[in-house]
Image (cartoon, rainbow, N blue to C red):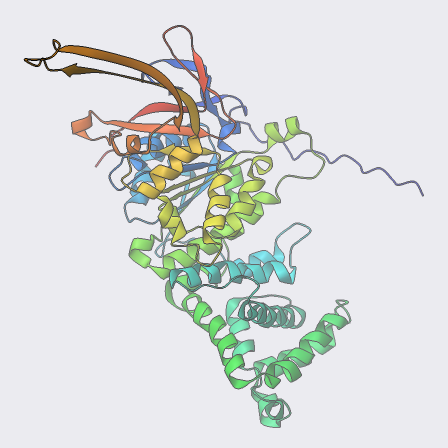
Length: 517
């Protein structure tokens, strides 16, 4: 049977394009001498789409050096973006950056005092797109936040562990019941369903429980609506779960599953997070697609777990929205002309990373998304990714961020890893020496012997100790911040005595720009 050819999708309505071409320079990087700028060393959107990881110890100038340079480049290029915050002064810095770029009106600052609200469950249920309302997508919202919670407390275990699977089962059945019965979804409803579920088979048959339980009442309402929604099979599974399987679990097992959910949901059901994420919605991830810059001013240093959980959750929703925004079968040129690039920015990124980041970055280029993560050292990630495969997870995640910018660092793990990433080469090692013999009264006269030679050795292109001696900015360094930049697959052009040569890394000096106090 011949297949009907797929019609090529029409590109989205062209916006008033005000962003650069993919290969237009965002940064002009100098070579080893700190002055020479060559076209081959320009860093553009195509490079940004491949992701950036900045390493630098405390006081190394990473935020005010390469971080500030990248910020200005993205703002000047009119990109939309999402900014995650760890420190209390970051929102002020972004206000200054936006003011310098003439983009103050594009800032959308979300904090506990602002008017902005985002009901994440209602958004995921009712958003546009083929995957909207799918139960598994809603379940994954919770597990992304739960992963951050487990890592915060140093817990191990993988996503396939028994407790993770049973928690997903609990959420899946609570979500299906709420959607079938109420046509909407919010966190308080899920909480009432789960906490009012029967704790034994006998209780499920008790008339008092049936009259008082929200779970039971919604099961009755859902029975009347399931046929009209063509969800009889889903309701049958959900009903069996709540009336048979869930109350039949061992008391200890059931209490662990329920408390895992309630302990995570509790912080979203009260105070600031309830107002921000469980009420109505007046901003959403798609705002960044039109050039807005959403700054989640819920710094971890101020709000601790609340700030971390809220930002990890919104980051996950934003990443999923970015991934689905490119219509299928759209030509590359049409995408470049009509789809605004966006960026994801996180200083102190160890607070916000999770397992989904590596997957997101693997397709970020086609989604026109630029990820920039800044952290002190590699162990800060290793401490977050717990479990037996933590190092592999970290290396897979960092490996997907192609541009690595290294600033001054005193951590040997990071410095050795950086040297290994840049690699080794065969080098000629010259040696020589002179030896002298003393004259003896009854022997021959004294003299000297000279020797010289050359041997071939395999050595680091950049020695690990070099990362400890990079300038860190400030007045004592004339506001100069040294960096060594490596990009996978990139050949940089650097000057040499005879003619320019190619190498896989470049040294660049960033100049700090003072902001208004």
